[in-house]
Length: 460
Ligand code: PEP
Ligand code: MN
Image (tube, rainbow, N blue to C red; front, side, top):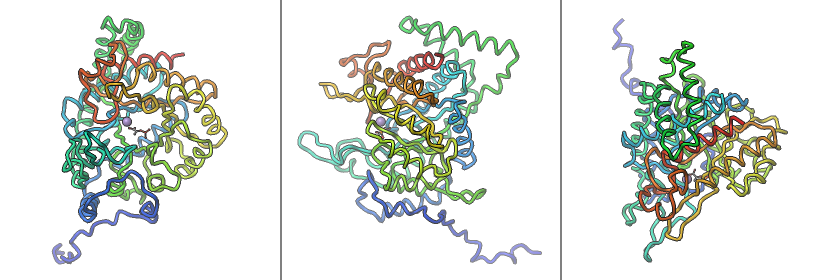
């Protein structure tokens, strides 16, 4: 039969898939915090329409794999490392910067794997961390007031009216920048760059630095373990590739909704902008748009929990976001502050244990420990970061629950944004290389040092 006679040309036009199921747009009826006031809503709608038709950034099957890996964390059989910029920038999506961040995370993961004797699930705050919640809608400089910077996906950092005006076209640039970042991450982590022996040799370099002598012993132990594996015939070809997942704060509702696809295998919605999305401390209202929307997608979901979180809030978040109690579905990322975690966390852990839910607990030792110096730098003390991590482990030991992982703002570059560490960055030193447009990040050395300290905690 002549094929052309079978196709009615009017039917051959591919209708856009509606990419919806009942309830997926219910969030539109809810209070929606932290959204940009687009000056031209029609232009924003046009971008959303466009994004509904672009290829997904991640495949739903990968999202399921991550959920399965996170289920092992929920069972206490693995650990999570999640790290990257506070706010990624379009200009920062260069090969060097992406490589340095991936390298830092891989290096940390090797140390943590050894310390915990457990697999480490690796997630970047990368390839999509372009939208930021702000405590104030506006910023004033020298008497001039303009909209606050909300991340490169919304407006520019430059302090001019034009740059600070939200521009929906930036959502498209965010999509393309996420795509190219993810492409390079996949190349690095699948193409040989993640080879265990190479990653470990970078760590040896860190421990050989006289400033880091304290960590030499642990580095030597890992060295022996790698040599033992080699001698015992471990398949190092297998260890040249690692799974590396992308995550960001699910904040910009138009973007996240537009990137959501109905998976042809299961008929269920997946937010294909990243493997893992988290809801921030400022947008986790129980009746808000973010909680409603993310309750309806299949991705594993995180929620940031600050020091004021009550047991009731936590239980209701569990009921809404993980009604079926699926291990790996829900992660609580606590950001309590070093002085608060030992009091605030145990009651939550205890209550979670008494429910039949199995949320993963990750510590974010960054966001509860922010300070501003007299010279105006937003910074954090490395010692406070370490203290919160220690408090996290103590709380879990007290309750008998699994400390599931670590969430840090870091970069692979030698910036000077957080104070302390073996480089002893002080207030004056912050001026040397402060590059973050948002929160201060641990630099490469501080990140590695933190991983060695956490490895010591894990080995206790
Ligand atoms: C962040 O992770 O950059 C952030 C804004 O965190 P939180 O929601 O915990 O304040
Ligand atoms: Mn931050």
